[in-house]
Image 1 (tube, helix red, strand yellow):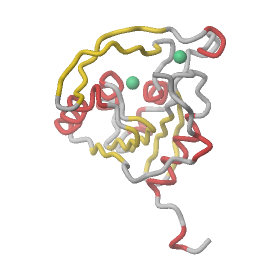
Image 2 (cartoon, protein in one colour):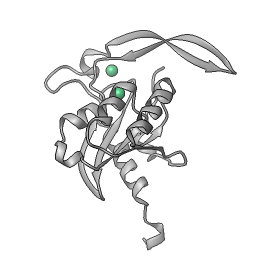
Image 3 (cartoon, helix red, strand yellow):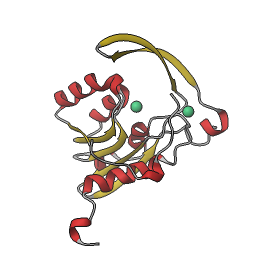
Image 4 (tube, rainbow, N blue to C red):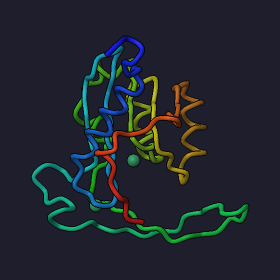
Length: 172
Ligand SMILES: [Zn+2]
Ligand SMILES: [Zn+2]
């Protein structure tokens, strides 16, 4: 492989995040996150139940329902959405399994735009950059405002294409 065919670092680390996401046992959502300092990989995590506790593949998803404001064709409507609350989110697991000292000045690559709670925790974790691929419109506005206030570089890899073998069908 010649030099100009090499993957750029964004693609390289996002590919790893997508590979990591395939470890998730939740049939509704596979999320992967990696911690990177400079060009060094310092941690990986995916969404899952606490260790030693039955996960979604064994115990089924734990479904919570709530209403979400969605904009469709310029119209705002409240739509009932279901999500699985059995799992610890990938970003939170990443924080649980890495050290503060490794996070200072580091970047998190995550397959999906963080939810509000994860974004809030990431903002207080020492990291200085968050890179994601799939957007999560529900919390997007308040998350990007908060990242801006905090001075954290928050960017989406839009033209990125995940490795095909890492993709799953997500139940709505
Ligand atoms: Zn689940
Ligand atoms: Zn989250």
